Image 1 (cartoon, rainbow, N blue to C red):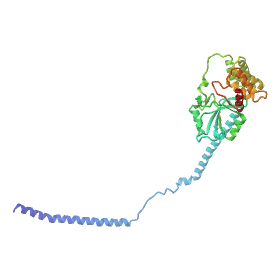
Image 2 (image 1 turned 45 degrees about the vertical axis):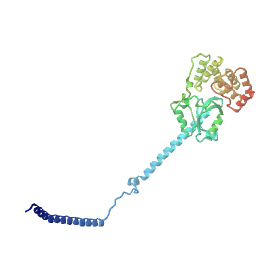
Image 3 (image 1 turned 180 degrees about the horizontal axis):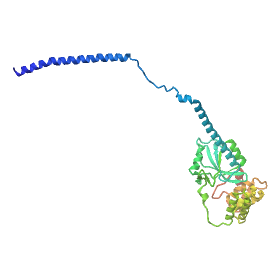
Image 4 (image 1 turned 135 degrees about the vertical axis):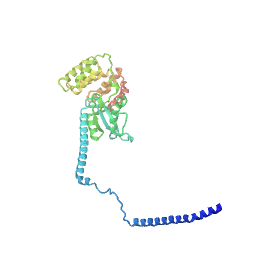
Length: 348
């Protein structure tokens, strides 16, 4: 048989088998479709369950201990509020005590908007420092900077800004203690703090120049220093009398600071009977040496004595060659209105 006939015969034999196999496959697919459609119908008839968590349902533990939790929260809130209230009361008492008995280098937190209007939005709080005390007159210097928040004053201490020489303005402001107490009532003085050993919150609050010393011998300097040490313990034993003795020795040696400290004792009646006339005389001795605090204190005390004329005092200083415009440390041109007027009269 020819080869082509054989090939044709084989292909004819295979075709029926392929057709049979194709029919079998088609039948199987049809059966699968029927089964799938049946299972899909069954799935549709089955009930659908959707499980969710209701977050609105309260925790059984919370329901059981709800009252206890509320009581604990209220107790904690009461303790916090009580501690804050107690702290405010203690600070108010501290402020009142410090202002009633002022000391050099005391710091006041001032809400300056109570004192002055028309400040900028960022200007509210200032710090004030007690620079001098003459009788019941307290001389303070305001800081050169304003702060918006009260806590920024604490940060100024923390970052040692008070050690900067010009942190406080040179201009002096005189207030009577009664006026400072009124400022507490009005809310102008928010807080008063007293450094210990020139330190507050672990930071130095005086300029570095405060610690500068000289080894040059000056008559009366040693006696004055000893008198200051005794004066720190004036309320114990006879330290006030010992301080008076040392200041007297220093003043007799012509030391201006000793003269001023002795005058302060006569002015306040510490260790000696109060005598304003003697105090003025001692202040004048220091003023004639161009000692600035003596000039300032004389001007303040002079207003308390009827026979004292501050203009005559300035004219005497000018004749002695003392520059009252002022010395290197501070330009004290107008601490009070009377002081300013007296200076103007002197220039005429």
